[in-house]
Amino acid sequence: MTSRRRGAFVLAIACVLLTASLAVAADIEGFIKSVDPSGRMITLEDGTQLTVPATAKVEAGALKPGSHVKASFQSQGDAKVVTAIQVTPKK
Image (tube, rainbow, N blue to C red):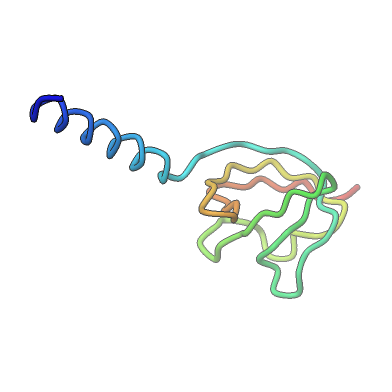
């Protein structure tokens, strides 16, 4: 393998590794099953756990079991961190 090809190969591998480590964005919808005591971790009925950062715009006290949520989040390691959330209170 020539030096030029080897360099291109190493560059391609580096790009793949860098891209794989970037946060992945996704959307989810469901009903809240539980909320941890801090109010910053919610579990949906399907078992999905979402971390709601202090910067997320959500009405105080809106995160309650039975409430319906639509959320956008980014996967950061094992955590799903909310970037936007809409909550419809339990009827």
